Image (cartoon, rainbow, N blue to C red; front, side):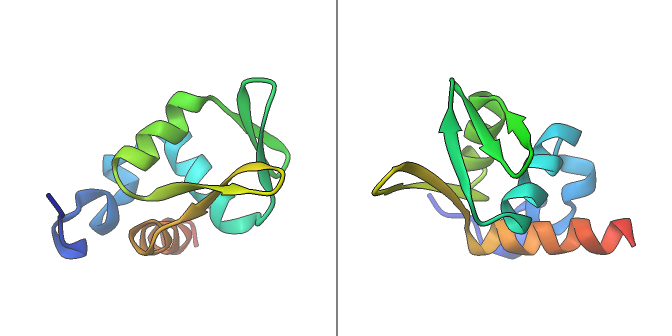
Length: 92
């Protein structure tokens, strides 16, 4: 079952819907292109995130994991990019 972007609360109001750590992970994925799984946690930029945080973003269809030559890599979906943009606007 798919949800339209306008009906996805994580896209329309991510500051309220997403916990702080998920917000940080979302903006980190949007900011840093290089990320990887290392020692059981995701290393994105200079921060580490637990797999449960990333799984929660994937469950909300804000991020996706793809296979690369060197292992799994995270990227944002269209919904994730919109949510990250809204979070950046809210911080300014």
